[in-house]
Image (cartoon, rainbow, N blue to C red):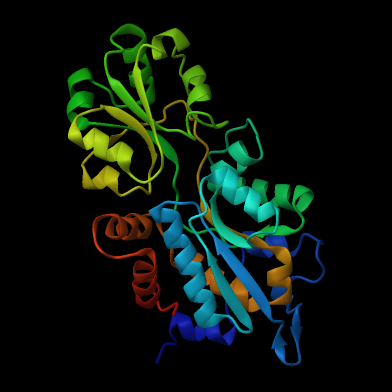
Length: 329
């Protein structure tokens, strides 16, 4: 009988997976690579406690639940503390770097452009992963990025299809031209954080040559994360918003995503961050989280976040069903 993913995981056979996790282990910092067995003793991996954090919206809480359940089921000598739902990017990153949490799931573009303040756009997945790994090795030796998932949450502009069809808008350039030359008589919804972040709205206006005085004439409504922006679009009270492609409301409401034809947005690979000392001391924690990454796709994120948002299912329930379906637990 072919062994299940869970059986392979428990045997430790996937602890040496390649990619960013392996690269991080070869950085030369923090002692012997976790994948080579460093941190294990005659009695097994060292005892560790992992405080798992997340931002405060359904997608992030789902990621946190995935890690916690996989660690509990598959790691040895490891306990998990639930610190999910902390807030926005700044709060979670502050908690991570102040040793208030040891692990959460991040987005590569948020890491590169917002947290680390880099101006360059990196559209290629492999280049982004390598660049971030190198950045961590040079600047954040106490942290490491584990295996990236296959899920990509790249940002875009999302519009009502009836409005887009009426005005012939298929790309962000089309949207920009409409603002410049046609009309500013509409409502645009943005996340408050996106309105201020390095790779967010202000620089998008510059890249797509939307004059600030024209933009100021638009009714711009700022909201928090959680899906309110999509409810506003679906109700007809706005025609456009910002969002990322793993958000299920885009497909639930049949909304259009505009082509980023000037390549403004960096790729947004979803990947786990953890305190390096933990996975050095206990490689089974690395394996448990990497098993989640191996199963996680853009479609899986959309499907599960939609369940959490629109049914009585909570993040823990959705995570358990997903992990069992993929033989992780």
